[in-house]
Length: 354
Image (cartoon, rainbow, N blue to C red; front, side):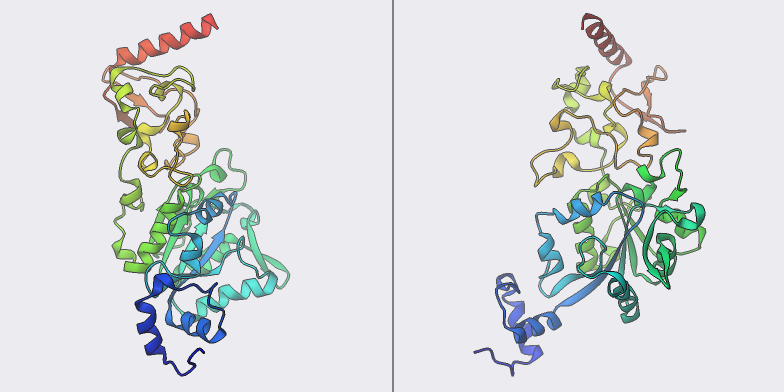
């Protein structure tokens, strides 16, 4: 029979040695569940969804190691787990009960704010509302301005939140803006971690939250754009298994060919992400392996600056600098201009024969 006189200190000592074997689903005794919950250190998280498609959430909850259950319900490290206080897609509560969790979480103390999607500004931000108060919708802009100054840190999940993304692309009818532009305009200095990607890899999101959970925000090594170098520290082009074909001037002229995809629009030369090392879909595949060029979804200018997505950028001078459609930006690549031009000629000839 469960010993109800077991002290909290005794329980913590017991749990520390056997955390991996514990499961709230298997241990139904209410006394045990209560003590287990009290013993865990919680990291409260408020996850807001602005202008977007919910793809970042879908990607995140498909994380494999640790699973989303480990992250939210048990523990990533002994005695610590993420307490997802508010998430409009996965929480069971609705209406006033759901909205009260935001107020209660803020009142209890420190929390981490996650924003998915951009922040519309036009017409006072009415194009993205979450909940209501006194019969009036609460815009995502109001939520950000209220919560951001009080948060320990903010995670911008996905390219829309980090850089504007598709929802802020031209002609941008809602006046959508990325998170950091909003904070800057309102002199809010809360630290921001940007996790671009459309969607971001689940490891990028969960790994960032786990790092904050285990070691604090200072443990993240961020680049000048606020991206963790662990995930965004290298060019895709430098890690691509087809880089050898690029060096030899072997370019695919259609998507089914097993050569460098530069001429059919690959944006790996300007995109920082570790997709080729980390892989997607439970570490089985990534875009180039599926014969699709990288479309640069983690690039700060996605989608406008990397469009058209399935066309090669033009060679703009004899030093082989390639215009990527980004104002003032050119990336120096190593293949000769002649190789690129020959590949283009082959593509034209193939089109004529077809």
